Length: 194
Image (cartoon, rainbow, N blue to C red):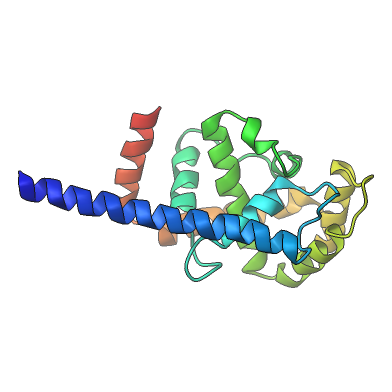
């Protein structure tokens, strides 16, 4: 029994260290992205971009697959659909996501990471980088509608058209990167937390 307890202690400590490092990278990314004016200091910016980019910086190396966020998406897809992108894009940075019910906020973070990963990992990379440069320089009158229009102008199509590509991308990531055994442990923990 002592050997089993020691193994559990080592596993829990390793998980805690990993989560601590992700949190440091996430919060450090926020600080650097604001310091380097990637994020607007005074204008509205979407929470999907602010939290999605910070989550994008959590894995090692930066931009790698975020296993926990991906498992969160798989778990949520068992009982519901992803949030419509227009809805996800409507949240402003600085609190909108934090006012949501905890499991829905977790989905918003996971989906924000996935959307940033989708945009940064494929044919939209250059246009989303151009969008980020432009959105960070907007003024105080910049609102949700103007933000959506700016993103769609850079994407060259409506977000609703991009949504189908994004959902396919998420399902492919889940199929190719989520290990069944790890997911079952994750799923069990999520069910216990409910």
